[in-house]
Amino acid sequence: MRVTRGEVVLVDYPYSDGTGSKVRPAVVVQNDNLNLQITDTILAAISRSKHRASGTQLLIEIGTPEGGQSGLRQDSMVQCENLITIDQRQIIAVIGRLPDPLMQTIDGCLKSALALS
Image (cartoon, rainbow, N blue to C red; front, side, top):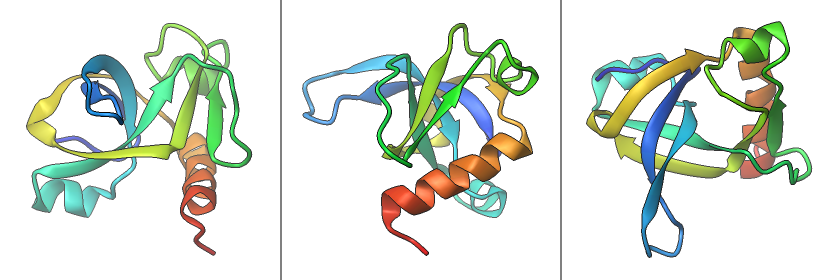
């Protein structure tokens, strides 16, 4: 399955300690040129946890017009400090999309998480 930047997808996301995984939402953060050229893509995890890391996470409120497009069932945090590269064939489904204004905010969160200027 080919994906595009900003799509909210379901993926079997592995635990960082290697003990297992669980199906969870994530957002595609890799650019579309690479998504077309290679089979891997980069995702940022999405969690129901409301614990916010300074500058590296974005709250998605499903009651807002932008958040409603996400396909998420409850308010959630995009965790830009929790990235994974996976083969696009491992994506279970596309459930929604984050509009450009939210993706621009995610760009800032990624810069903060990766210490980019």
